[in-house]
Image (cartoon, rainbow, N blue to C red; front, side):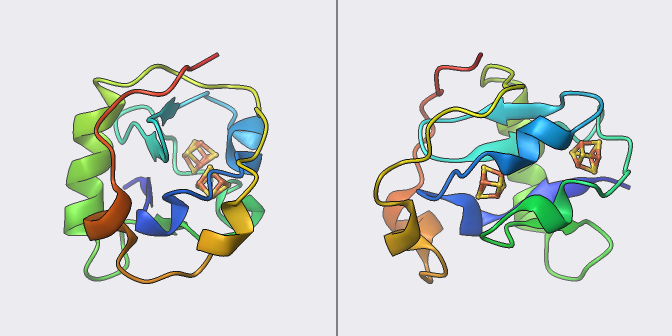
Length: 112
Ligand code: SF4
Ligand code: SF4
């Protein structure tokens, strides 16, 4: 079992989650983060920290797509362990539907 980041993170990227993860298993894309499912110890402390409610346990139904995306991109994107500046327009994209189709970027972020 692991926790996964869903498309609710896209273009919000508040990064409160990375500060609390005890095993530093967040990875940064251009406009979202993902969790490495093999490194996550399932502690759950990141879930309530996310203002966008983007982090969910993979025991919830319908998360297969996001689990796959987290596994794939955590292998490609750089590790991130410290909170960087939140994008200025993050609040405008909070709760917006269909962000994956409209805005997902496979490009890596800067990492630490
Ligand atoms: S706190 Fe939530 S929205 Fe922010 S980077 Fe982490 S998962 Fe994404
Ligand atoms: S559940 Fe725990 S180990 Fe997994 S990503 Fe969240 S804080 Fe890190």
